Amino acid sequence: MERRSALQKLTTAAALLAVGVAPYGISTLLSSEQSVSRRRSLEKAKRRNYLRPPGALKDDAAFVAACIGCGLCGEVCPPRCILFHGQGGGAKVNTPYIKPEEKGCILCNKCMEVCPTEALVETAREKIDMGLAQIDRTACYPWVDRGICGACVSICPLGDRAITFKLFNQYRPVIEKGCVGCGLCVEVCPHPSVPIWVIDRPSAKRNTQKA
Amino acid sequence: MSAKRQSPFFLWRHLNKLRWLTLTTVFVMLVALPFVHLYQTYVAAHAYDLLSPSEVQIYDAVEALTAPFTNDPAEDLDAIKGNTWSGTFWGVKLSDPLAALGQMAAGRTLYWPFLLTALIPIGLSVVFGRFFCGWICPATLIYELNSNFAAWLHWAGFNPGNRHFDKRIKYGVLALGVIGSAATGSVLVAAVYPPAIVGREIYYAVALGGFGTGAVFFLGTLLFDLLVARRGFCRVLCPGGALYSLLGRYRLVRIRRIVEDCNDCAKCNAVCEFDLDPLRDNFGQECNNCTACIAICPTDAMTFTLRLTDIEPQGSGHLGRQYIREQDKQGNGT
Image (cartoon, rainbow over all chains, first blue to last red; front, side, top):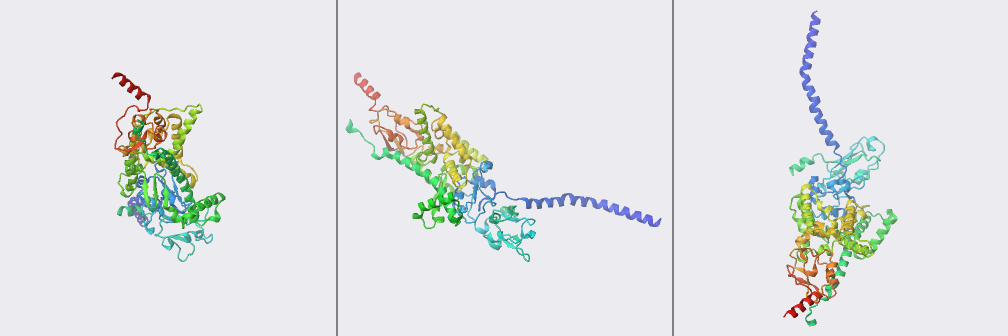
């Protein structure tokens, strides 16, 4: 009897403790954990389907307002990477964009120099912010041990400030903070599903607020 | 009487040919520049061996044309770029005043470096009026050919309509375009302004492999001109034409009728692309100094003058039947 009542007391205490702790557990499960994961997914999933030319105003509405659609940036672009929004562009029709899957930007500065409005602002090469490259490590050939490649690393115009091989695990490319999102790596990637793309720079918003 | 005749400078009546030449030159440039750009991209890529046969033709043709003038095609050929909406000429940037106005409205900001690029066109418009419309606009070339085509259709027995609308509608279009640009935050006027459309669409067609939506709009304006109102878009609807008309309201260089030499044949009124009334000295702010009336006048009664306003109506021409009849009546009366 003695032992049984002790057991009973123990289970009641455990149950009370569980009930008492439950709100905290539930709240962490529901709110904080979910918000953390949501934030993470937002940061991860902001994959850009098109890039603005280098030096473009960060706020896209301001860019569309400043651009007069003259096409000069496209007309001076040596690799002809600058395309123009057509019928589907809505209010963005005739504004320039870059599709890195087709052709990346070579960061030659010509479009910024020729732009008559402030839509494209002349920017130093390292300060350009078209985005940040991201590699899908579940598909990239070296990352899944399907051979050696290094195409993205060797094409990068900014060198090891922007993309390097992983230390102690050669041929696996890693994006560094110096990446400006020119998209040449996307253009050159030989993988049929192109497991490298350009995302919005995660800290872009904070930076623009400061500046 | 013939001793008193003041004949205009003999070259004025050949200016219309010069005008066709400049219009054609601008248009040919707009077609040539995209090909030059293609050539530059091939040069920059060192890709001659990889070009397709048609690209090789472009490469060879542009190289043959430009090689005498350039050392480094990738850089030197950047000297002239763009179109009449906005372009660079040896580092000098020029923009359409409408582009400056539309961009100002869309961004609700004053960006001086850009507004200054419109300064030279504005200055020239203040002196020469709507000269852009008659002498430079790449759409004008097509529109004038289109109205020639309409005249030919008329001759051939088809009668395309020629309605008349209030010419002040275009000022409404201009105001609406500017307000719309400010409301939507994108330069809307660029989408309904034929010279901008033509320059852009030629580039899209040559360098980017196909016309955009603007081409459809431009085709619509051509049909409007052909079937509804002769030169209707420029006369009635064009927002840029409205802006240039306003700028050229007090233009210095005007066309004037020499009433002593005029015989009231009214060929000037018939030939006027903007439906003005040169026969009764009524040019207004919309004359683009195209000189077609000078060229067609059989008695050389049209000339240039430097005035800020049109001269007062001078009545019927002194070589005309009506003036002679009036003189006879007066002679009989006294």
